[in-house]
Image (cartoon, rainbow, N blue to C red):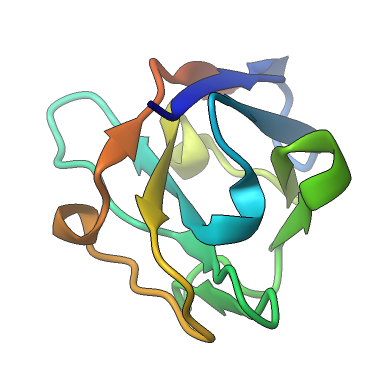
Length: 126
């Protein structure tokens, strides 16, 4: 059974940067597509970035593709989300999620994922 634990969230000023980590245990991330899904208060959880298992190809929501970078280190069973130029609108709980598949592409839909972490809070405020 795959388990996911997020970390790296915190309070940051507008324009600042954070790097989130999603550490997997119980299985190898090589066989999983993994994505990041922030959920702001009162809003639905939304996919912003994912990375496929095969070819490690990323997919981004247009609103973040110039500011956020997703990467995967299979040796460490960890997926990262590097965030720069953060805005107050980025404030949310950030969840990582995984789907067991061998695929060269990935989807940003929450319904495509089977395993979820507990989330890490990101607050962007001056």
